[in-house]
Amino acid sequence: MKCEHINVLITGGSRGTGAAIAKKCAEYGARVIVHYNSNRTEAEAVAARIGNNCAGLIAEDLSQPGAGARLWAQANELAGPLNALVNNAGIDLVTDPHGDDAQWAEGWAKIMAVNLQAPADLCRAALVDYRAAGGGRIVNICSRASIRGDAIDHPAYAASKGALLALNKTIARGAADDGVLAYALAPGWINTEMAPTDPDVLRAAKAEIPLGDFAQVEEIGALVAFLLSDLCPSATGATFDINGASHVR
Image (cartoon, rainbow, N blue to C red):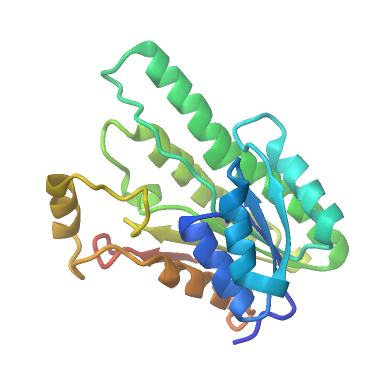
């Protein structure tokens, strides 16, 4: 598997799943631009592990208006032209319909900004450049919640990821003539700092997974690298479930 032809921007690439994606893509030869929100120390640590295949680090708060378009422009200026985009950055906040009005409104606004608007703006910018270049690749990290929904106090997260999945399918269908390949990953729990730590919650979360454990970040990274390798372009538009058979279709 080879990714030497890939020049990829990875959002949320400074830790957890994003860092694993960056590392695995670089292992197979891709040039990687690592986006991070505010912790440059973590981003620099990822760059050090990647070595010469790190083409740069860019800070951008994806909750702010226009962040996606700015990030794509900065990445192209720093290390372009880009031919791959991985929308990995995401947040999850409580948006309980039985909670207070401020929590509901603020949670929905921030989640939609980071999980949907910024990725959509990045995809839009990529599509414009890909049409001019004759093609490119997009991988959107969605969620098991995109398909089956989520807990009642996390509806905004499920809605944002469901919309991102619909966007990915639309891009795959509508931009194939421009040489664009678009894939979605729908993981369940991943073994990162976002996973539950309360013993009772952790036990219940693992109990519903037939495989018995959360997905590892290295699994996500390996699948993303494979999709960017162009070994299976006919999989464009597909959604890849990585959830230990906790949700099968």
